[in-house]
Image (cartoon, rainbow, N blue to C red; front, side, top):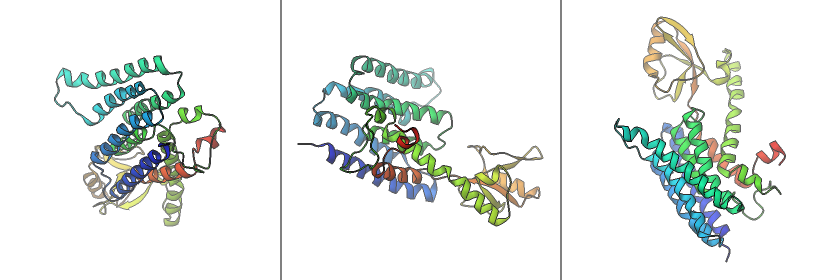
Length: 297
């Protein structure tokens, strides 16, 4: 009996349910607890050996769980304290993840099936690096991508879906499903500047580059707003900027601007990235890998 399709359906239903609820939380509060991503990751971890057994592949391939768990242990378990052990723990965990992955690839890299499994910790490391470089700003966004990487070592395949298919088997390994979701979500977000441009043009308020990244608000109307400032007072000098500060005290900075005569100020919204990710999940499942069109693979 072929269990591939039921397992794919289970993965998709779980991912859609969690991302849908998380999208609501992201829109309302811009805060999403770890529990949702932990549960999704646990499901993915459990399904990997089930998938390997169902596909009658060597059970030893499940050793790929070692680098996956090593990465997860750093993401969700904080040793705490300022001891030397606590400071070295992340290095040890990622060293274990990378080292074990290299050893596993040494034995089984010639197996296309294992290449799919190995793409999971590789994608996880990629997400962690992007988060450390502040290319992924939200912790929940990064954890969502990590859980999707674990949940989908293979691209979902449901009958006639996705519509876009590639004859190149290595394309799915080169571009894991979670990476395709990330890129597709980023493309959705890339259209936001056009919306900001239209909004600011209609309001008769535009300044470059701020006008492509956000809009203006009254300095006394920040309560409950999910935004970052794009201007502030620094030692008595008014300055514009485009890269928000994570440690910004929004109401304090806005009050300072108002006291210095700046009644309307430029802000950029905290984009609820989980929503574009949900759209990207559905699009990538039904339509397929958009990178196949971009790179003509």
